[in-house]
Image (cartoon, rainbow, N blue to C red):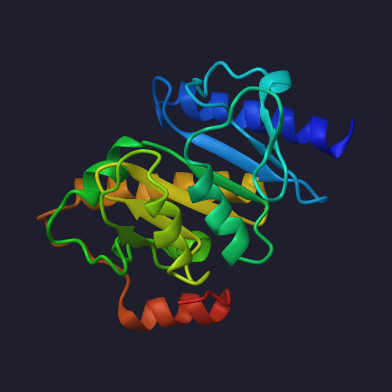
Length: 214
């Protein structure tokens, strides 16, 4: 199987798994993969992640010209911003996952580090997650906001919208965004009960041990 064919299959397999588990619903969410030659595979606009057809995945040039397949998601600028600013990015996942969206609406969250330090795996897979302001869906300002981070964050949370995570490949991005959603769920479940989060010393130990950009 060619690299492109395998990537198409992986996009559909991961997307369906996320849809089936309620991590995104309806026609929400989108996924992209960068191939070794720089071209991008992107989920089509208006498509449900639970019912994707590998043959209809959008094929884009490295500079985001549509080469084949269905028309791509309108949030291409969001995806391309990660590819252009974070060297080594091979996959980007964007979801409308419930707990992450709920967390983005709480007034007390720290916009520079949305997730409380509850587990080591959130630190390991995500680093600090930046809260970005509200944008209209498809607004190119989302991409500009990601570019403004100059590649310093692999994960952002769009206010009232959902998380976006970049990884070295599609699987890494998928695992990381699921960790984000589970940590957001933990944060909401423990809100107001003063949970024992990781101490500053424990956070530093995790950061040192796993060489996290913190």
